[in-house]
Image (cartoon, rainbow, N blue to C red; front, side, top):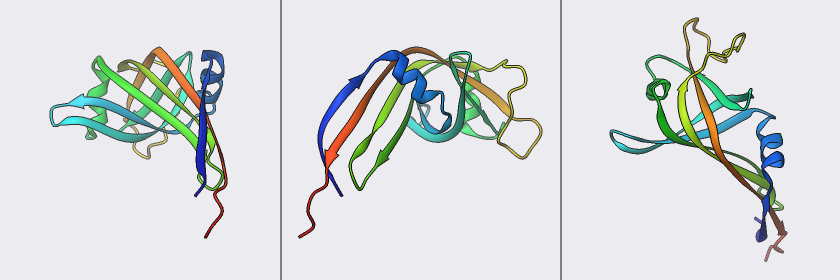
Length: 131
């Protein structure tokens, strides 16, 4: 595994560009049982992070306004090169027309995280020689 040698801040437009690629990220919120972190498939649609979940999932509670954080990253652990973006905002129901669910069932709960703050860092490192 490579040693991380520095972190450098990313500006907001670059953070949003990286978020725009979609994929898998993590949603964090304060639930009844404490802090909860769950992975979701997401898309950035009209400036909001949008994901779908089963009505039986703890994530379905986020259709009600909730303070959340959302994090996504892409890091090559062999070289310690990559990026990480953190969004803070308020979740709520998504009303994005034509949004496609990743879920097999027909009645997913659609959730949007309205982006209120976004920060990011580029991560760079050099390979550490193996002994």
